[in-house]
Image (cartoon, rainbow, N blue to C red; front, side, top):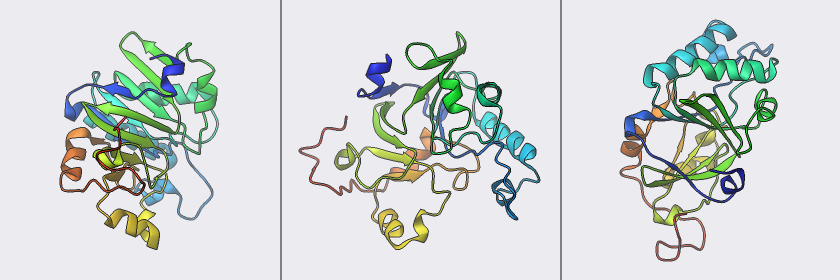
Length: 228
């Protein structure tokens, strides 16, 4: 897919359901001087231990044929493109679709090293595809709207499109409006590490969405809305 096509065309991801992984907000190398930093909240004893644990959890569900989606906030701190690509190269995958998030250390430096399509090839069998903080894809035919941030109304919602997001670290349901959104039965799901200590695969995601409704929060209906 060309860089121009990425701006308006949905991606097509085809693979075994169990070999398509979704995850977000890994926060690797995030080591603030907090009394209770994120790595400690997640049960690790240091930022380095957290990095190794996150990579291990990914690789336990992935292989060299995996298609993965990381919904932003992958890395913090210094190191630039070298550290960013070092982290990604430790992950097992064939294609990795990646968003910047709102914490984009390494991501923006790595963009300078991509090809004319905004991709980076470790080798002929391992590619990173850089994408915006909102994009759409058909995943084994299922329309999914990917956004680093949770959004109320998204394309294809009335016709059963899924929405995957990250960013909120399990806190969306703690607000009245966030709880109402989640309780509506909308086919939206958070893939942050706080909600999923390991990446969730497409088979697991479909089971979660199975009993949810085609809720729409805009003027579109199943008759008028085109899912991508």
